[in-house]
Length: 171
View: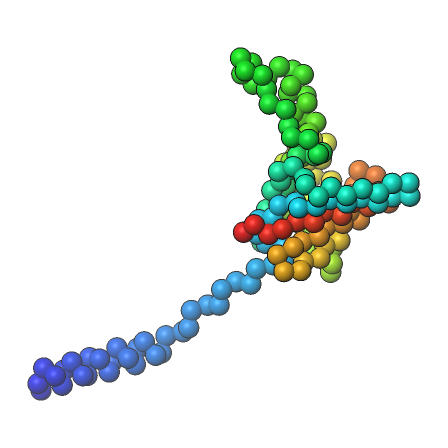
């Protein structure tokens, strides 16, 4: 057999074995909430009040396959910086910083058009006891996500103010 014939036989064997391999598994389908989001608008409505905030402070919502993490500055004002010369801040500065910041992370579950979050770690210790949760109606359109509070385990009452949070996908 000539070298060309041997090369042709080897090439044929490689082609056959390559064609017989299973195709790679399909990429997992991401859930509708998966990704990184930031708040772009808040609005609230109740019996005696309504408001809209279109320039919210910094925020970050992360949703993975089963877990989430939420951090945002609550309010319309930027957080006050600690004064120079007070590493870690004074007690009053720490309290002010604590009161302007929301943070919790844990697992989430989707049921129909609702998402229920169950925190494992939270800034507020009472929110991470293992029996707390919050449920939101959600809607995704393109790169926007809307969350509207439906209920939470802090109270048995229906929320008196319905807050709608509009987020934009950043990743």
